[in-house]
Structures are given as C-alpha cells and as structure tokens.
Image 1 (cartoon, helix red, strand yellow):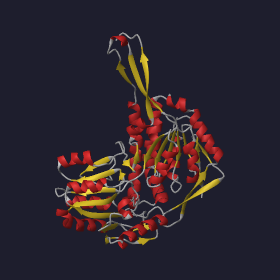
Image 2: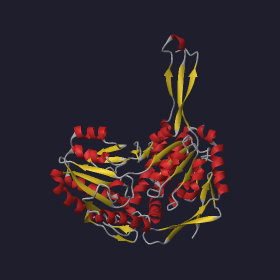
Image 3: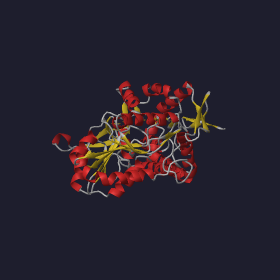
Image 4: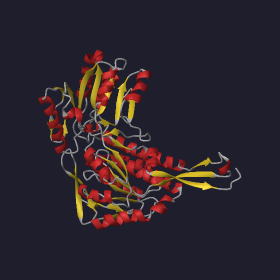
Length: 475
C-alpha cells in the first residue's frame, strides 16, 4: 500500500516512521501515513514563522481564490473523499457525504468572507484637539496558528482550522487525530495546488505524545483545539500567554414541551442521538419531556430509534455505523451497564457487537451516572419527565457542559426565554441541539470550551485590532 506523504511547508514529504490507519468496522488496513521526524516538525514551524509577515500581506484575492479552489476541488472529488472518510472514520457513507458537502461550504464561506475582510475608519475630530484626525482600524493576525483536529469530523473540523487562518493571512500548522489523518492530508494536497506561498500551511500527523512540543512552541501563538475536556484545559493551563480556542464537547439536551409536534421531535431526537454513532459534540444525550406528554412521546421515540438502519457503513441505507474503535464501544457499554446496575431501564438497544453499539434509550437514570453527567460520545440517550419549563431548564443548566441545547416549542416567549436563560453557546428552537450551520458562531461555555468557530467568528478570533491615526486631513 502506498504511503501518503505529509505536508511540510506546502510540499509533500516522508519521514522515518509510518502510521497505519484501520477501518473501524472490520479492522482492515485502509491507508498508511508518513510521520514527520522532530527535525521536520521544526522545519514546518520555522517556515510558518518565517513567512508570517508575507502571509499577513497577501492580497485578499490570493487568499480568496485559494479557498475557492479547495471548495471546488472538494466538490469535484466529493464521492472519493466521502469514501475516504468512511474508510478511516467508520461513519456511514450517508454522513460522510454530508461532511464533504459541509466542507465544500466551509471553504466557500471562507472565500466569501475573505473578499469582505476590510478595515474600518473612525473620525476622531469629536473635539477641537483632534481636528483633521481619522483612525483606520484593521484586524491583523495574532500570529501563526496551531490547529489540532479530532477524529469525528476529520475533514470538516480540519477545514474549520485551516480556512479562517488562510482567510486572515495566518500560516497554520495542522495536527490531525492519529486515528484519522488521511482526510487532513488530502486537504494539504488540495492546498498545494493553489498559489499560496510555501510555509503557509503544514499538515503533520504526529503522535499525540508529541503534541505538547507544538503547543509550547512560542512561534505558534494561537492554538485552536477540538477534542476532550482534560486535554483541552491542560493545553490552556500550560500556555497562559497564548490565545487558545477550545471546542471540548458536551452532553446535548433536548427539551420537549406540550405545544410541540411530538412525531417530529421523536424522529429528530431518535436520529440525532445516534448519527455519527453518537460521536458528535452536539449529539442528543439528555431528553427532558414535559410530564403531560411523556407517555405519548416515549413510545414514539423508542419506535424512531428502533427503526434506524444499523450495520455496514458502506451500505447507502445505513444510518448508524460503528464507533471509531472497539475500545470506544466497550467504554460506552460499561457506562450503560453502570447506569442499569444503579436502576436505569433500557427501553431500546443496550447491546454491543465489536466496535458497534446499538442505538440505546435509557429511562430512570440516576443523577450521578456517567451517562447523565459526562459526554457519552456514543449512541446513547436518556429520557426523563419534567414538570414544566422551569424544571426542564434547570436540568439543562445542571450540566458541567454548555455547548448547544434544543427546545421543541412553538411559543416565541419560551424561545426567547431559552435563549436568555440556558447556559449554552447556542439554542436551537424547534429542533435538536445537533444542528450547526458552518457559517454561524459555534462554541460553548463551561466545560464545553471557550471561543467560537464559524468562519467570520474564527477570523475575528485569530486576529486583533490595529489602529493607524491619520493627521491633518481636510475632513
């Protein structure tokens, strides 16, 4: 099998070691990636640092055309890339194709935002001492970016690191997840087809134990990390003087109120607790249902979950495939077993076969169970009756996470109350918390992290204002 090169300062390269990528569904080898040596990592970081002033001065059309090129090439190769994602990640083709579609849009949005990226002016002659003065305010990169991307969306979440960096003229070094490096390396291949200068990007599939060296390097003053809570906060604590953006996950809650369409809510919650095999930061994990409709809603939810098509991710009809590894599935199994031993009832699922765990619904889950408190990151949800909006919102807020929440209601007053009172980064009215548009601000509070992604939001995050005062103007 051919070895996929990594990208060192815009050029393909190989090192002394290789990383074997296996398919989660059947364990077969699907690819081999070259691993850079420490000296090659140093070359990549040095190249990013050396080019940062040139990168910041790149004309907007150069940046925008490079981003548009990647978007177009992703579209041209969409089926090939979807199959690559399924190969290394195990997500069903249904969702892999959706991820490619989103990545196409992510780069397109970035190209559009780049063409709108411009400074502003402010008249300063608001008192006699400042006559003839005007401020020109531009946003400039804070420096080169270290982007650390996760396994669950190996293409699109890597795109959310790369695209805003190029848009603002910041060099970026990407460290993809070791389980799924191939999608990120393909993005490097497409970027290499553009007119971006050498050093503008590197994609380095180094093992996780070598990541702290990149995090600590002062030549990478911006760190954008998507991954686990302990690792994310340890990164921020280790580099207090760097600008660190963290997207750390959640245990997304959905609230079902009496005025909602119960069939719609059941179908959406059933699907989006289990899409990506639950391996999404905004998958539905906790479901709070008004007691007045609980008995009507729960059978609909269980029916929705039991109707999901599970199995081979290569089958076009499959909705729920394996987790990323058997270890991950065994962890999910242990958490469910723990909840059941403590008194929870299994309404659907609750079984494992290799790396696959059946879509599962639990009721009567104790408040201290891991499936209630932590992020399951698997196809498991709990359902619980509540006595009204107050209790529902209190339970949503009781979590240590705060990424997104969904509220099924037609009441506009409750919608604005949810937006005002729920301690989350985003509230989705009439749908699951799993909805994300790639151009909107996206991120959380509490243990869900700090900072926002979404193209313009990330562009603002990677930059800071710089002022030039013009004097003696005939205003």
